[in-house]
Length: 188
Image (cartoon, rainbow, N blue to C red; front, side, top):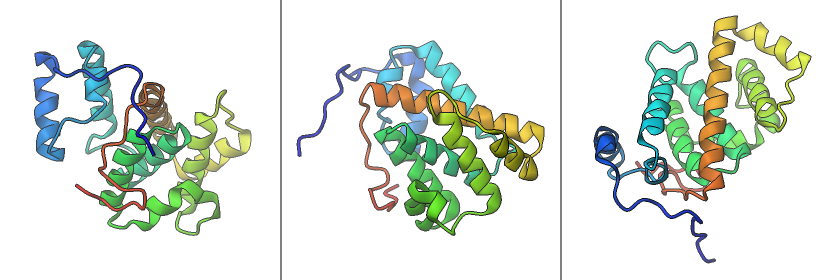
């Protein structure tokens, strides 16, 4: 099968203003992450996006690292973003120390691996990712059983951010990087 080529070519040279991000990516992943070669066309916007994700991933975030990775993986799947599925599956595997949830997240309604709180959050993420968003009263009630108002707002910001990222990457055909193979096996 022929690999699909992006219709907007990636940058071959990253702007110097993104050197700190490039250095961090090379240290952590051994290479520049694919989206940087597209977002790099807009360095100021890329820094804003990086600061936003940094805030969502902060140590004192209201959502656990595992739940953040779970929601980001699910939204990536819903948006059909090859790079995001790859990167977020790796993050989920690392944060849960198992491949089971990575492999089950695409079919979470049929799986017994997810807690009631995770199921409420996944249901909300699915509804929020629909176009237009289809968040029902029942989903809102389910969320409030497990999460306070501030946590729900932070969850909403995380899902909205992942939609932005995944839709940008998917629209530009930004490819997977091979960080986590289809079966959920981490490479990094």
